[in-house]
Length: 249
Image (tube, rainbow, N blue to C red):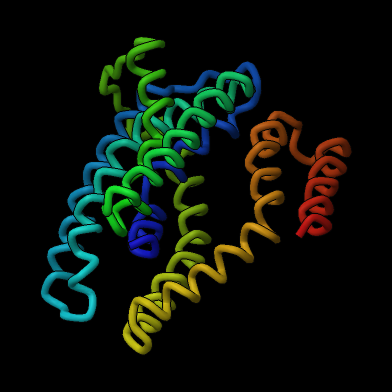
């Protein structure tokens, strides 16, 4: 399920929304247009995910995961408001506000996961609570900040974000395409149980080796985009981040 959702997420509005961080300080970000594009993309992915679940139902080997894929399709709808608010805060570099919202989501995820597991929810206890992480930013956007979409759209103006997103999408497609193929063939060959052990091993390795670098790059990327590209200071900063990632890994 994670591989399927991750692969489809490659085509989500996130890669286009990330372009808002590339706009230099003082430049105007047209959030309304990004939200309009995001709503169309996320709605299409929601439908596509449910279509994939229908196909999985017809294949005996993968039929058990079809209901889970149906449920996780709602992730794309929740992600629209959540990621939108996160990118707003990252551009403003309002880290305190952002970490509070993320912290609430992480704690809720952990608590609900345990409660659902104890209640006998099985695999749903692993997947469904992950969507709770998206609720605090979404609530903050629509109910605390009272932001409302106007459904503005201009194809020409969106061109820069489109080109940036398509470039990012191609690199992500290679990564998640490999993971999807890997999971598909391993489940076919060895079943869900053995693949589960393999997945846990990869998860532990990622926590040990990649947790610090991933958090580091996520936190520093919005800061790096504020630097003048090609300047000596920008080059030194990017080199330092690259070395820090390599050393911590």
